[in-house]
Length: 292
Image 1 (cartoon, rainbow, N blue to C red):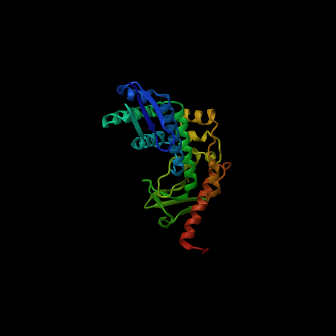
Image 2 (cartoon, one colour):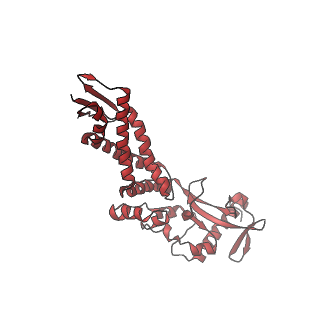
Image 3 (cartoon, rainbow, N blue to C red):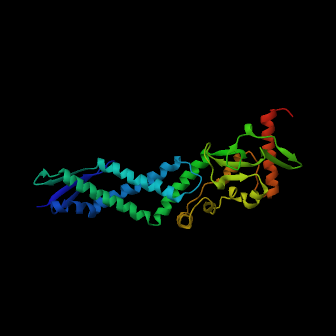
């Protein structure tokens, strides 16, 4: 005799009916039936999209491929582990349900195997570059909206001193030196989340050597090539911007909120003088208030 299986997934209104030649073939039917596969694949694609959208609230200023990969696909695995608990199904034979705990486990494992197959295939395809790239762009947009410009004097151990802990500067002409117990401190300006260590890309140091080795053009250019500097791989960049025509965020907009009037046309010496002037002004403002 033949058996009829009825299955429905959460958040869907339609019930799928599938014929099974015998009890032993039910799990195999779950794996191979086109209607079940199509429904499961639609759920999978929706969940990947939902996972990417969720990271519009996850600020991230640097593309860690391993981390981004986990953000997207771990969410899909966890989602399905919860989904499987809510799947409803029944198997009828001789006008009665023949579902047993063992049969239920077989069906659940078959569904899980198929869903995991979809994830595994997508993880090794070009589409994964689009998934991960889209997730990172969402994170980066959130980072740009949530971050702010910060500044301080950095010690050799990378501790950053706020203005209330700054020593008195040594001024020689246009040169300014900051020392704390004979330790030279570096003026540091960066964009990032408050209370977190910024990645190197978002840091501008106020020394001539650092400024000669780091171009500020990246902060003003909205060319998609900037994503190489943020950790994008060749494959991510090609699939995101060449194949799919994605548009990166307007990174240059953050320069409008910077307390120092940086320009991509300035030579390193000019940029250094702007940083020195700003830090001296902040020191005097804290020490002397509005006094001259």
